[in-house]
Length: 453
Image (cartoon, rainbow, N blue to C red; front, side):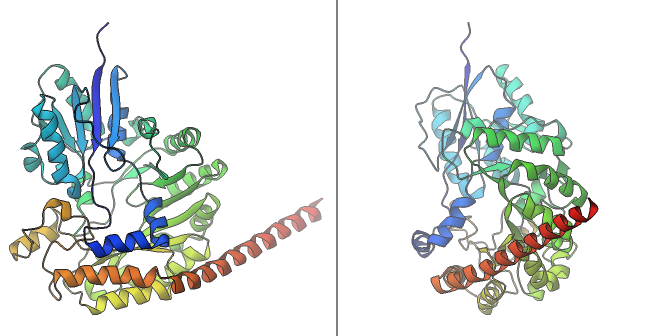
């Protein structure tokens, strides 16, 4: 009986929350920030999908270097690595170690899609596109001893035919949350966003039945799992979202997702989100400045949405759904005053949590092109600094150091004990109001029922 081929799936380590010592000190000291940071931590979804596309005769091991060390002496016939830009330098080191032993290495993921020719210098094969469309061919060529240097996707992957991810590959390690994908892509083409530009030009969806089956499997495999829907924009198709939320209600899960702000206008979706266990939605506000938002996306959608931010935040949080606001600092119209203005919005509207990051000129983005032409990229910053919390370019109205200091100042102001207590009182009043409304609704239903007997 032939020996099973051994496949290693490796996610390289990275520095989370930036390399600035002040960021790392704040991370160590703020318990509230640690809670949010911990909740949003998960495994490398792309590798779990690769595992699901690999035939059962392969012996697969998933290694997350952020949790466990890579055994460079491990028996392996093939290695697959993935990574975002901040992981690229380490990805190259891992690839070099295995290739020195004669083990072929295949790379995919965001950075490989952004700079495939650079990545190709460090590995045996590069996948440019979605795993569903490329990995079966990669394995076929590997088994024939004919790996190609580059695999490029032709057409979009049909997510309705995608196999369920092999979460069991990561189950031996403890993750606070489990990522589940229901759709892929985003309708907004923001100038600084690398993922939207490189993966799909049109949204793709799994069926509601697929998603429900996957959530049920996660609930069976993991002890009281917290589900993070990994979609870039969870609430694009409203009718589909309503159907999915109704199906999630009986499952009794707790979950969070990501979206733009537009769903606040739909009270039915807000109620279904709350009833289905939605605890928080990460919303990409990006900025509270009209000048900064002008031209940030192709259709100026976020600029038009700016005047709804206050109303939207209140509507969402009044339904018991926390708003985790994401803000991008350091765009060309931002000044040092932008930090104070952003902090004021966060605190005046009692956001549940925040992500304040330095705008980052990722390879392949229009923002990168602009900054390269203007000579503003800091060439002494390696890929490992592309964490979105480290300044890797020269801002127009401040120094790189002032940009980093401004973002950490936002965190210090928002996640301080005094404001946290005020925020707790604010949310307690919301929850009391929700309980009162539910009691009134139940009483009205009971009364109506009696009158009909």
